[in-house]
Amino acid sequence: MPLVGIGAGSVDNFNGFWIQDVSGLTEGTWYVDDISLISVPKTVSSQSIYTDGLQNNWVNSSTATVNFSNKMPNHSGKASIAVTSTAGYESLYLTHPQQDGSLFQTLSFWIDGGPKGGQELRVTATASGVPYTVHNLPPLVKNVWQEVIIPLESLGVGSRGDLDGFMISDRSGAAEPTYYVDDVTLSLTPAVNPLSTITVSTSNPAPISQYIYGVNSTDFANLGPGFTMARQGGTG
Image (spheres, helix red, strand yellow):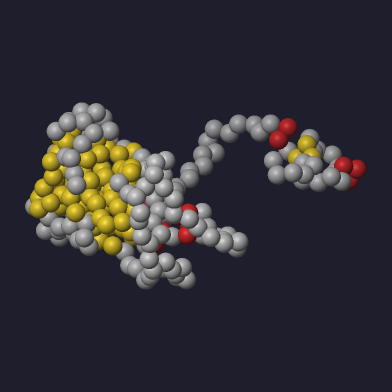
C-alpha cells in the first residue's frame, strides 16, 4: 500500500497507522505479520495487459461477449479483442491481483468502432473491486483505430494500493455493435497534451475597450496619463 494512498505520502510528521474494522460489528480474531515501511517502491516497467492475448496475470471478468483471439481487424500483432454488448451497460472487464496504482501513470489502449461505429462507451478503473471515476469516450469512429490514453489519477486510482481492474462499458443503456480493442498497457509515461494550433485572423478587426488598460502599481501619483485602472495587490 503506497503511503500516498493513505494521505501520508508527503508529510514530515507521520507517526503511526491503524488497521480498523469497517463493518461496525464484532469481528473474529485475525492475524498480522511482517509489517514494514519500504523506503522506495520496487522497480517496475510498463505492464502489458493485452497483446495478442492477456498478459502478466490479467484475466477476463467481462459481462459483454468477448473474443480475445479476433483476427481482423487488429491494430498490431495477430489478434485483437472483439467486444459485443448484447444488453445495456455490459463491459469488457479485465482484472488483476491487487497492485500499487501509484507505480504507473496512464492506461492506454487502441480502439476501433468496427463497420458500424457510434458506440457510446465509458472507461472505469476498480480498486478492491469498487469502480471509481468514470471517463466517457466520444462515440467511436467506424473502421478507424484510435489511441486512448487516460491518466490513472483521472480514473481515481493513481494513489490506490489495491488497483485490480479496468472496464470499458456501454453507457447508452442499449445493445451496442461489435467494437475492437488492442494493445492495452499500464504505462509509466505520463500523458502529454496534444499540440494545439492557434490561428489569429486580422481580416475583421474590432476596437478594444479603453477600460481594460491598467498597471500593476500603487504609485498613483506617478502613473501618468492613459491608465484607467491600477491593481492594488492580492492574487485576483
